[in-house]
Amino acid sequence: MKKIIITLLVLALSVSVLALAGCGGSDSGDGDSPEKVVEQFMKSTVAEDADAVYDLLSEADQAEVTDKEELVAGSADAIDSYTVGKATISGDEARVPSTIVLTDLDSTLEFDVVLVKEGGAWKISLEGTGASMDDAFDKIFEDMDLEDLEVSE
Image (tube, rainbow, N blue to C red):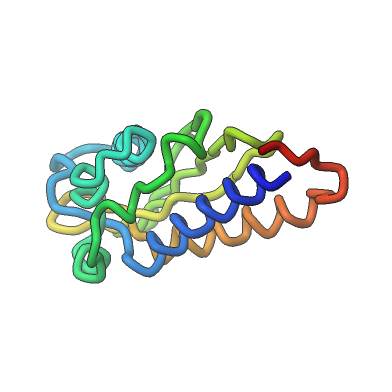
């Protein structure tokens, strides 16, 4: 149980850091679809490639980042797999339904990655994404019976 709680806290902290830092970037590749940007974001997050993740964040979010490494710290151990769905685009905002399977839990986070269009390129918005992930975490904690979890050290 201790390992599961630590994993959840690390993932929640990573999401909080991302939400505070914001998402977006300048080198996602003009013309890439929101789905391609989210796929690259997820791939880079799991690979703990802080520079690549940073480059995919919105300018506003990049301005808030004080330590790029905090954006991805612990992600490789916490995330087992992910999926990226089909975007819904409304003007200069897109929402891409995504899932993350957590390594140490029998749980899946289902949330929307929110993107904004900047200079013709789609960038991750951590503020919107963070709010969606918070709702996903709330659902996991509601569904989780902590007394039934085994302690693994």
